[in-house]
Image (cartoon, rainbow, N blue to C red; front, side, top):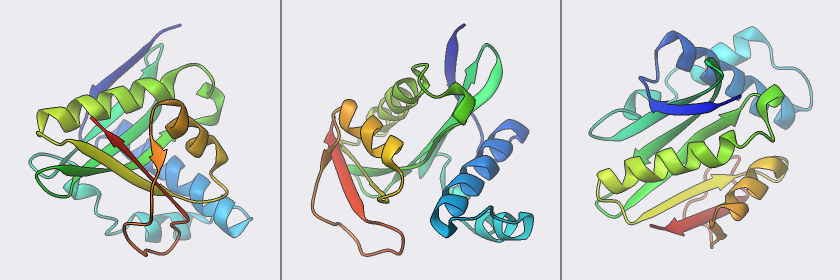
Length: 158
């Protein structure tokens, strides 16, 4: 059982399916009910994922024994800073080390852009994500924006 994490276009079939599963999970948790297909479509429409490609960002897909299992995006904010976004590991693959490999791949991409800090925001209910970030050296920082759905802010110096 092995993981591979590689750069991939955000709109490839596997990446699109992973982004859809990501949005389904975060929306369903937030609304405390299953998200509908229409709500997922609406959430993905114009979500800015097109910026997750050079020169403004990157997107990676993780595969577990060849099966698409995880994804993460990086959005370059300025010469020194990038934001981590759309970090997702399908539930059946959680606890197998894929989250840490996603973070390592995104951090490598950030270094290639010359970025010195990665930051992110997350919510109270995304407990697994907050644990993953803390485990891999991200520390809670003061809010760096006031967007809807953000309740915790993290950063890591590279």
